[in-house]
Length: 208
Image (tube, rainbow, N blue to C red; front, side, top):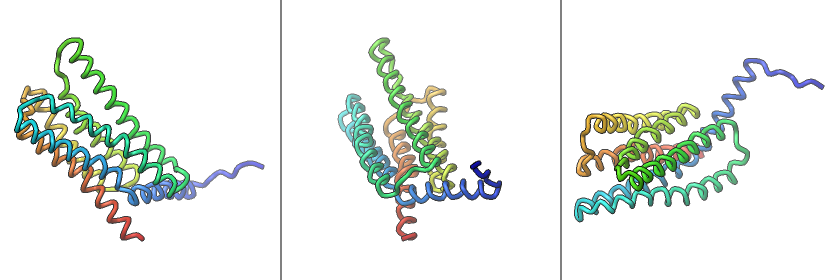
């Protein structure tokens, strides 16, 4: 028995259904965004305060706390979400791969920066600021486009604007001084992660 080919209308309905299902998953769980958002903002604020009071650059190593917190918390939240929602759709897999690519890229970037510092004594850590404010927002915008969620696109756009500004500063050899850059970074992540996360959870409550 041959498989029946889907008509154009049926194909569109399947795609729309997949997107709607994926969107429902993410609307129902803005907790991953909130985890990364609050972790990033909290760690950034702590580093800002410590740098301002002690002027000791060693406190910048605390940035890696974000990866530790996010790396532990994300699988826990994802597993709970998977048990709740069941089988993944293609759109689920696509968004998952987008963020996996971001994660692997972050690890490679950090290792390269560490290599430059240990081998050549060259400070290239500012590239991670660019990464956090360009690659991460770009991934969020891509996810927003995939699941047709405007709040993710808007939040990602705010972060991306901050990232492009940061690139211009680095290209123009403008120092990313803590007193002005840290507030910019914190505001960008509030707009990118915390606000969209709360909006997604609010939408989930309204749909119940």
